[in-house]
Length: 269
Image (tube, rainbow, N blue to C red; front, top):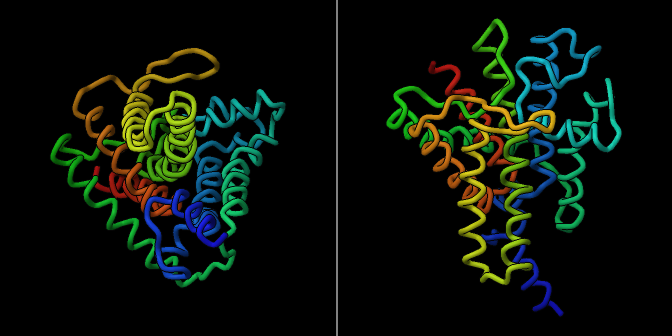
């Protein structure tokens, strides 16, 4: 019986860390939720500052909204949410998913606030290679936040949308899409685990990059940023990087790294 539990745990994560160590604690979903909660709140109130009408209008047409956020919002609208409830329901999706993952993981629930400082340092340091790569390929850091428009204060707006992108793009393209692709490739098509992982990472990375140029809004295919090879290649490489980071360090560190990349990129422009 202990052998069976051990095998099950080894399949659920790429790297096994010493129990209750910093690396093991901060890989837990509950840590991702606690660490990212402040970012979620900042993003919501930041977009209200950008768009004071946010509490009285549909969020879909507001400037500064991350497209990945709008996808989650459109799903909730299809389910039946509308009006101001979307303002609460959309970030609640992140909370519910992470709580569900924490429950099914059967790992400890205790969170040490002292871990948030080294987590932030880890996220910033993990973002540095992407900043350097972006500067080498693009000369200026390429934004990773696909939005439906920018408002008057571009630096503040880019920081706000970068925070939203860090959470919602990682939610869709890493936490959800990779799991769906693994199910399709490994369970339905019968590919080996190694091939399924490689294909899932590559397909999610290409989809992540393409999403900045083409996407769905209101059920229609729309063009976003004009296509250029340099940012497309960079974002594909970044997608692979985030996938590896997600496999090694979990959702919290990955979303935090994406967020800090966008913040640093906005400040360097």
